[in-house]
Image (cartoon, rainbow, N blue to C red; front, side, top):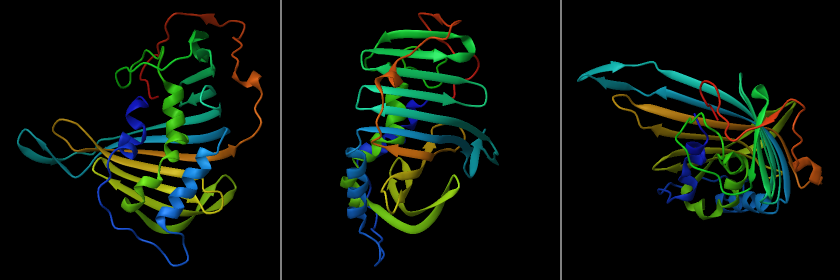
Length: 267
């Protein structure tokens, strides 16, 4: 499963349906909370985020098969480890891993490298807007993985305040992050395309966890897609050296014109 359909279901940038606002006396208003999150991410010049992305697709309720009603137990789950280091809008290093595959993407603002360690092969192109390809395409040459994952873990939180009237502050909750527990506000945004639940740090106003739930089109059965992004480490505005965004090919690595993943592409 590729990352393109998971850019917060695109719903964060569409019109939100009306949803009653819930607040607590001791908590900030939803509007103030979203403004604080927005300000935090807009003031970031560099960041290093380590996170896990879990994608689950499962049947919901009963399905129609050949005119008959039946209950299906289809369930599919994928886990992807993410490490993204970025400076400004042009320099970034992304490492993606699942149980079998690994991809490294590096941009210094002028050149873009994509490297598959298992194949000891890489591509080198000029940095530019990535290509759109079919979901799950095995050919990853030119895919806009950097923009996709930067949106997923950070950029989407820069434009939250317009949705204050459609968000609901549900509760406070302690979220385990590594060996620590973070005091968080849990915020829900409901849209026609699905729901988005955010765990927002009460002190730092960063998002430690986001769960995006949406229906997935499928013939004959009702499927629901749930994308959960849980941050393990968030470091903002640290000093990054230019050398962090230069790719040095390993000794046996070969430069190729096209890169294709073997088997399924979960990224």
